[in-house]
Length: 133
Image 1 (tube, rainbow, N blue to C red):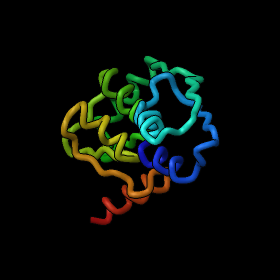
Image 2 (cartoon, one colour):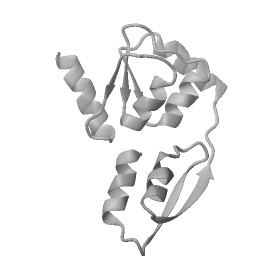
Image 3 (cartoon, rainbow, N blue to C red):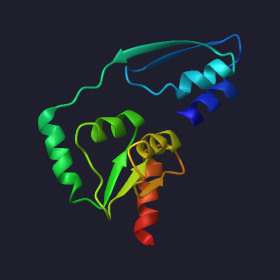
Image 4 (tube, rainbow, N blue to C red):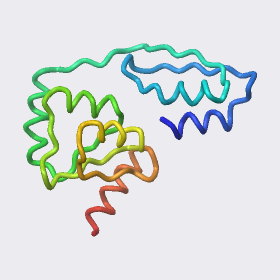
C-alpha cells in the first residue's frame, strides 16, 4: 500500500481528486500517506470481508501440508491468522509487499519472502527464486 500511495503522490496533481474503493478492513497506510502529502481523496469502503467456515477449515488443514503460503494483502493475513490459521515450521509465507509482511510480523516471526514487484508476477518470481536455491 505504501508503494501505491507514494506512486499516487508522485503522479496525481494537487488539484486532482482520488476515489479509493476498498474493503472495510483495508489498510490505513494508503490514506495516511495521502493525508501527509495533502492529497484530496474520498475513501469508500465498498465491501466487507467475511469468513466461510468450510473454506477456513480447508485452508487451515491444507496449510499444514504446504511449502509456500501466499498472502496478497494484510487483510488476507489477518483473516487467516485470526481464524485459527498457522504457518508450520518449514513453510515459507510469500507476501505480495512490505505492508503485507508487516501485518504478518504482528502474528509472529515467520519464515517469509517478499515479492520484489508488488503484484502476482512478483509473487510467482519470488517463489521461483526460492525454489532455485
